[in-house]
Image 1: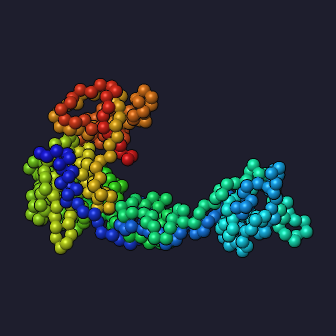
Image 2: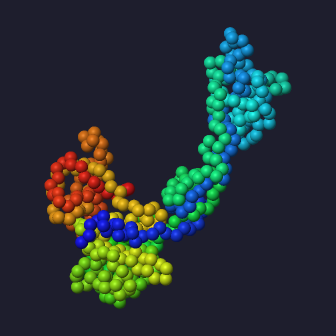
Image 3: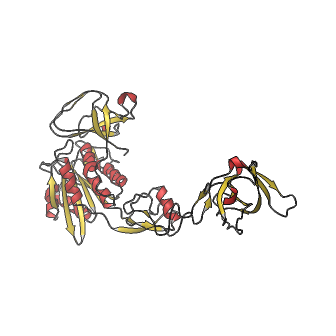
Amino acid sequence: MISINEALQFVLDQTRAGRAVRVPVLSGQSETPDALGRILAEDVTSDIDSPPHDKAMMDGFALHGDNLTGGDGPSSSHVELQVIEEVTAGTVPSKTLASGKASRIMTGAPIPAGASAVVMVERTEFQADPSGESLGTVRISCADLPSAGENILPKATSLAVGQQVLSKGTTLRPIEIGLLSEVGRTGVDVFARPSVAVMTSGDELVTPDKKPGPGQIRNSNNPMLVALARRAGGIVKDLGIARDEEGDIRRLVAEGLTHDILILSGGVSAGVLDLIPKVLADAGVEQIFHKVNLKPGKPMWFGVHESDGRKTLVFGLPGNPVSSLVCFELFARAAIEKLRGAGDVALPMVHARLSQAHQQRGDRPVYFPAAITNGEAASGGLPVATPLPWQGSADLATLAQADCLIYFPAGKNSYTAGDVVEAYRFDD
């Protein structure tokens, strides 16, 4: 048996980032694929200066540098200037500002030539010219005069032509969608979402729409694994249930090997009807490892298949639902993330304090279902984790009450309330 970290490294070593595809930055139709939530497969540079000109940062009056130091005489307490034009956002100043003159200006508007600062409108007194021959005059207290450059955002402060604004590997959130639009991008290269096929096996399984008969159970693994793979970023094909018969398994495995990832649940242990490893070997899938020092999830199987330039990563997960979930989150999710361009991604863990004493049985590392709450002063600000009354790897009902898995390493069995542990939060 290999360790969890060794198994994860084997998976990552066999996984390469997917191909780049061109998509719209944002689609007008929610069902049309676009760049939101995807990972950039290219560096993006700006085709403009932003702002494209020196611009006013607030409504007010643009002033010449000569008029920033006070009135005409040493005893003067005010400056009075002639207003020569009004500049609004979207227009271009037509007059050069000279000493003794001012231009009324709006937020975002270009700064007139000759202007050195903007005084906010709240610190001015404007008097319109009743004759209409000019705009009027503005009176400003010397104490309210701005310093040179005040309330002016210089050209290209935010972006400059040719400047790299986003790097390959960036996840595109709504903020990045806005930035792409600012630099004129309507399409962008992103990593393709990996195609994932999911199959469960077992004669005891029936579909969720059927009531189980004697010796039967409903197939909860396929819906759970399909949902997990979709949440991780895959485009998922549900292959359904394979019966414990080589021909049926072989047929669905062959279809699954046309995808980037094939996830199998059940049939990888050592039972008489655990046929998956043999069928995979017959199909040319190379086994990389089988069995991991892990609870739940020890029977975990991983291999690769290469044919006609396509590489398929094959994950054989144990059939019990909690085991399937743990193995998916530890290994398959990392492969999906890397294929869609996220790089080597390990399970994101947080530190938490135990709310109660806990006795851990067994000599393998364990991922144990728990409820977690935000921390308070009593926990030192750390989240607080409470182990749930979990009845083993088939107990999906208790798992549904969990929002984290506590990691209990091998070798320590007794924990007290307040001990700090690591946990994987499902919402992360």
